[in-house]
Image (cartoon, rainbow over all chains, first blue to last red; front, side, top):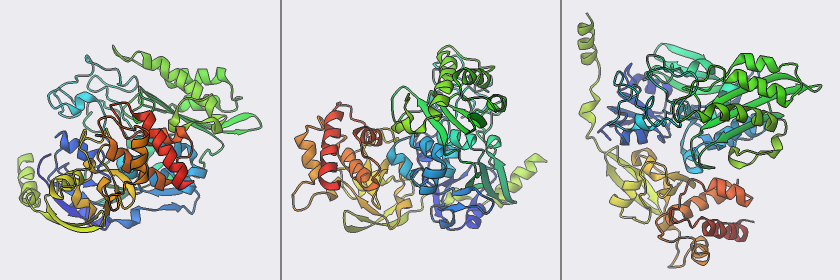
Length: 339
Length: 177
């Protein structure tokens, strides 16, 4: 780690006052990713601002217009086990509990989960070229060992994937992100929060360096009846996804009335294709329609030397998880395959 | 023009680099004893425990949050001390493996680890035991499959996992059911 200064704040205003338009001053909350990045000297900081004293960002509140606001400083575990989230947003609860380990979920915060960085091993290796870490240096993964890398939305400059499970569920639920900066508040729709790499892979998301996430709003529809989160990985727990799927439906009179399918582990952001979801509306929940939807979600996928298996795996995972969503009670701890 | 702005920016910005060697005082209650430490901000809770308080029961495995060997209880919750800055835990209550024994009497979970042969080299054991106690307090693990899932943050390279889960299941049944 480089040497840095340290300050604690207790209000959002005090925190914003300490931030800069550059990455030099960093907010620290759970620290589970930032401290690791500092240890590898992938990230350097002049100042760490400890925001854990901001009590107003540690609540779950019902919103007047329906829906729920989860505070940015609530830990992942507090969120996943919160009675409102467990009963009304079980997809979010399942997705959070599929990520990391119990210890890390006790530390990591909701705001930080959105801001975690890729686990591409070349990004973490200061001896390897990486456009995300050092813009313009090249991508080691494109022609390297790219088994864990992207099949959708990648660019010549970067094929890294965004590692969060929680964000796959938040994308499926159409969450919005509340942000405060020196020029006031912003509300960012979840699909607009994270970015595709394009020519600027060093930018993971659209949050400015002097802005702070204060909370995440969940719409009223929580898909409590038909939902499933499936996470496929090399190890059955405590490992990042090769492919993850969040599926959620509302079903009336035997027909699908609302459908959500989001993919994790395959792109620089949670991957949703609205055409595939629209296709399922007013259909009976049947394997043949899920297979068509799976084709639509993965349309245009391009794999590399070592991750060709991911295209087939993603399609099968979508079909299986949509079938699992019809019977949520069969789901197993850790978002393992069931049925 | 851009040079001018850059120059102006550097002048207008407070230079935090001057404050980098500033130490911070932090009060911790470790295993029932009040401790006051004066630390640089980048000292991890793990290093504070091991190097400053000489409580070497908590182990440094990977130092990157991947193995769970450094697990301790902070205000009753299991966390990774290697990914925690000590200065961020002002006023916290910390329990390490050294805090579990009373009058040379081993904690029931420690006794169960011996009974079930739940270790070989023993390096992961303090983290496993602190993690299991944190899990009991969370109250979310009922079945063996749930215990395995919620203990997955603690790796055992000797492969004593079956004995570890056996020991945890036995103590869970005896003390918490």
